[in-house]
Length: 222
Length: 264
Image (tube, rainbow over all chains, first blue to last red):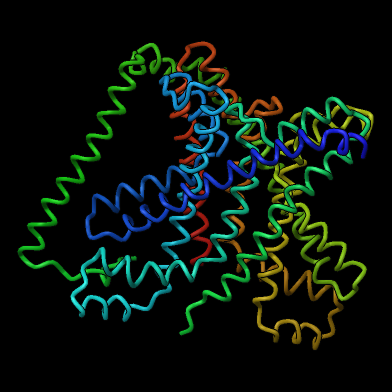
């Protein structure tokens, strides 16, 4: 226990990075995932095809490889610089990788949500003269979102845990700190592991409860 | 699945407009591809010496095939052990005895909540203190894959058993089976069968997660491809594209298999 108490400030800093990575990537994934879901139901075959290919590729590639690609590939080899500060640069590279990966899952969830919206809703919207974009934006997508609150919560929890892999692009978050601490305080391995595990449980448990409550509250009564 | 209900079947004007839009979209996609091409070109990513090594037999023999063997080895060991873990803990969570049910539930919920990488680090860096020997990277990876995916599989199987009609259990009791026999001979086989698509999706997750092995120095495909090949030919991007293609190919075949199993 001494190690966890002694290092509590550095642990908090590490978890703060985990939280920031999660929050920014979650926002990005929600936006990109929604765009992808809209593309996958669009009247244009080229849009559907592009989104289809993107989702298949992102879902079936290991996140480790995605993040290494953003770090080594886009960062080191293509020389894309997002910031002069190397830590900030790595942070944004990690966000790009996490967003690229997670948005495919958000897209899949939303698409299954669109499937739950009765055909009559879209038909009614069309008979009022709404076009594709308006039907999607005003009628079907809002209902789809309310139907998939719980799955989106699972994706957010998975994303929180996945941020640990950002260490391959040099982002110092909770998993990095845990490894360093195990190496420094070798005699307290179990306490350190349980401490960091508890940190993730503390992050994810409220999310699970919140999204469970929201999904009941937001459910569309049919 | 078509979403034709979101839009009217286009009339003559709509067809024309859609053609124009399709052309615009195609141009936009081409523009993106062109930007990527130029960016790659500026950094000499199209150079033949970066791509040709990927076609060489010795590169496959030294890096890709051993890496693939490493990935598949960890994945197969993980699938077998996680499957066993899942069966045992799903059964335990559905036990009539509180003292079995509650601890099993705690174990499952705990390992689902902890990031896989922390489990692997715990096993890899902590093993010497805990059991007096340093375990191999392979063992650490399989340890993590088993506990995390095993917990998820336990929940999938439990959901499968709960989805079975009550009559299955009642009929089994009626012909005189004991509790263990009812679970083992009647409920579990049906649950596993019903949940096959979900199980195969989880196996895909497990296969992808085995790539975490590279972080503790396990020689799997991503490590051999990115660190091994790229160290010799400095071709990170071509190597990453090849490795991704191999993963996508394997996973899409597994996915197709899952759909076929689900249809049966």
